[in-house]
Image (tube, one colour):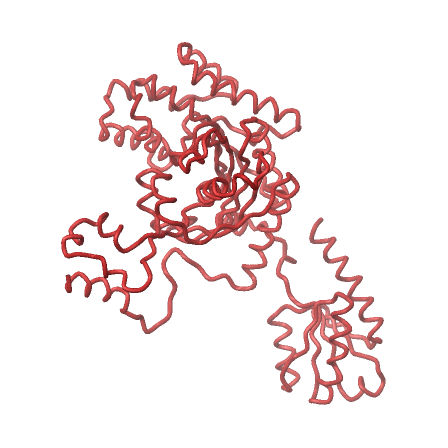
Length: 479
């Protein structure tokens, strides 16, 4: 027992002399946060426009809530949290021989893997206070013990919108509409929204004789973009699928043509499979709804290979990828007719999706889509020559802020050059200079840091000028 304890504690007490952050996590300075907030604000405005209400859930959930909801591979990516205090007190020597048994003894909580399962838990716990259909959006970080790489992080934000308490396909239609509107507002033009239906995949599984082994089939198909058809076939063979079944599968994987062509071909394939035929009918219904909203159909693509490996999806599924960038999906989701059932609340259908803010950020950076004016900074800095000038500037600062102008007063009595350097580094567009002349005349020197032009104006005139300029800049940025 002492050896096991010493090994565990040694890993927690080893300190690095140079500070660093864990792999797969990042710091975000003011410039990056301004850009991220642009994305957050855009997504939030669209969610609210479609009637979704805000919700937050805890960073940690009980492991009993999280495990078993994401498939075996998902469970392995859960970050576990050690019990507080002497977490080894209940551990016996023989427990160290079985990692799962040891885990149950030392950890009862985990970091949330996504926002959907915590949302389902919330719905069950608050079912008597919720008015169904319940539409919520949630924008919080999640954690996955994945291998970090470009576009894949261990800590990242998700922005979810879900509807529970209705099985109307209008919800699926509105998800596609929201995705389209967010990308339109962000200036992302070349993307495709892939759609499929789990019943269609089940039909393919039945066609190749894989009934009862759908989970392995879904997980393998979900890797098609990463490993290609050969890699999928290799994994399926390793999991016991026959070569004859894979010969039937290959033409289905390689189907091409328009949405209508693919659906027609699958209808012929599923002539004796009513469940899969219903899945195709649901897809056709949603696509017909979209035409009522005049959505540009070239963004929507029916992909019969789309699986989305999470085990709780039961109906229509979505995935969004931006063309021309080496980044995975930036949004995805689907319908989960029995997710709340695993927590004891039966017959509550739900559908939802998530935006991956970190990947959208990377896409916009790579495509140079952020506007130059996105960085938030003060409109004006008040600089001064000495302490009396600084004190003279305090009521001026207060008046400017009351006028709605973001302003700051340099806090130290420093050389004039140092104060101006500070304004340049922060990209503050205007500087008010206060010296003896300004104090004696009551006229303040206003300098435009971008053009170098300066003029002497009253405080009232400066407030009017900067307020008008602020409105113009905001209008230009939105346009």
